[in-house]
Image 1 (cartoon, rainbow, N blue to C red):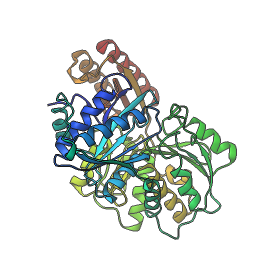
Image 2 (image 1 turned 30 degrees about the vertical axis):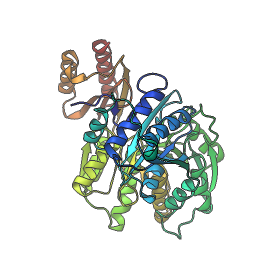
Image 3 (image 1 turned 120 degrees about the horizontal axis):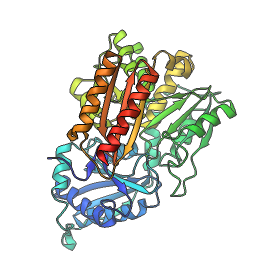
Length: 444
């Protein structure tokens, strides 16, 4: 049974359109309460900086308290911070209101269990099965209570600093930090400043409508320009909810998630703490797989979505994994992808090796890769379209061992992602454009 509302990272969509309405959030809270806190319990709710967060926060609070659960409202806090507070406060459920890297017109809702990990597909299906029922309202004596928690930001900041050696200092290092006008806008600069870095913050002035707008991990051009303009040692960009990170070297060149995963994995390898395979996704650059293979470090590919990377890491006893987009998971430090914690691991490696980011990244060659997004009217199973299958098979035969194709529907928006990777940049660009054109014509 496929999920109707849950995608690769919770429920997400345009605010005001199904499913992202106040009424749906109320029913979603009721359904989640029935499945995960049927006898009452504690739910923590965090959010990013979108103006619609107030509306969804209120609707979720009403739904959970009506179902008999107590609610702790954390205010703006990165997604991994919500996962952490769920554990520290021994809550039964954590909820994050965010559409991650999307613009403010969108919003989303994602859940964490008591261990700070994302829900399984099976649990999400159980919640979906109850969504058509009216929101549960218990008798007055059984209703939950709600209160705001003011210490969450400080607790998360302390945790981040605790993931690196206490003696590590960034004195003399100039860092441009782009928080995407999102959930980490206060915590990020404070953490780096506490370590002695000279921090130049950008994307740290949210107004409810500028999250991810011309900034952050998905739009790093401003970061690249600023790093060069101020002569910084490097730049760090988070996304709107703080679970992704990408970096920029001193020359203004982008260092994506694949290379960051490689650097972290190599840091653990050098110190002898790397265990199990490194896990990427079907979208991970072939250069990551082949470079790790040269070092006899096993590499596995999971479906797109950090929770699928997490599943593979746990199933195979791995510690380090992630996605090209900058979702980086360090299971020896966190229970979920954490942009700020991952950045700190990278800064630690830079300090310990004495090598600049550019040199560390250059150790992993990148194969040319073209990713095109084809917008469709609604989500569609591309594998079920014969014309698309035929076009793909023809191109795969043409590329042979010189390239590979990944064709998949986005789990968060009505988009078909066409990725072609290989040795010859011109050949894969042509193949990607031809396949994207075929998908657009067939899925229209």
